[in-house]
Figure 1 (cartoon, helix red, strand yellow):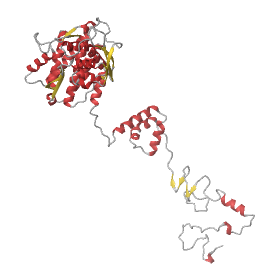
Figure 2: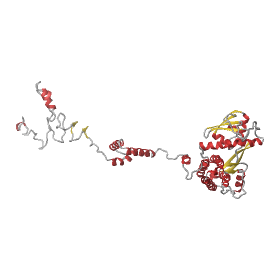
Figure 3: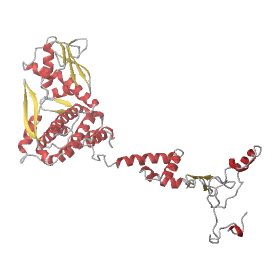
Figure 4: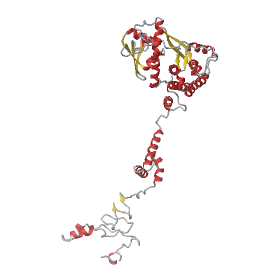
Length: 463
């Protein structure tokens, strides 16, 4: 008990303290130091631990050992405001409110760029597990962001254009249906046209050496890229005149033999042809395709004369497709341009034409004394001695070449020899680009028959 006589004040405040100052009470005596009987200790402990035993004014700190008001959590002596949790003295953020579908969809772009705060990222990703359209859009946006990577090379593949053209030419349906037998010519002229569009003016004057096989050796002729296109155009003129179209050489006295026609064109071209030859050749090839497409079925058997032999139109256009590919490859090599062989189906047709012409070529060599004489003559249409030609790879198959007479029929049962060749290599042999000695990958049987057939195949080449 304190009073005026002991230096205190009536309200227990030090007289020297200013009025209105709230005095902080001193530390309480630990319960164990209080004189409490053993029977009273449990009751005292229970009273001390009971919530609400003491009240603390709202907004005030709770000293250690004090009890927080009922319904409030206290961590490290701080009072938690109503409805909020406190951890390590900091207030927890309010719970995120759900966002509408429209708002979440508008956040997809920022989410794809990883520009959303953590709370929005969590909401967006939770939404993507429930909304399929937004999930698809998110994947597209993430793919687009991948293209914007700073370290990526955005340069296009230099072979992309040729692959796209090749795919388009193989899949695009024609407005006017092209006969199946004219499809190889249509495809090869289109591929060559794409090559010519890609080269510059200077490359039209790049030197090209054309090669073919005569008698027992290789012959060559030097020209330019423009000269090769002029050669193709003049020989295609043989097909054009058979259909009643204009001859690029003009006049009725134009040569008929392919080599003579080419020489005539080259002599008349002064100065030498330039890239201006591209459009006339292209227009002529398109006119040929349009004409045979509208002409009907009977036109396929129309005869096309090459001077010393003739072919039905269907075979003549296949022959022109073969030469277009071969000379296209010559041009591509001269200007360093990627150029693939024809499709497997078209290559098979070209090989089939060559094998059908081989017995006649062999007979011509035999009459000139360049091949062994016939051993067994048979009646026309009967099986005779044959060579089994096995073509491997693209366009491959098995053909049987009659050895003794063009009128005989090749037969597996009458085979006396076998030759195995790659499809492209066989075509290069027929085009005069590979010598007969280097052509065969595998040989078995009559060596004389094998030699005669390989040399006959090489002499089918021409300028």
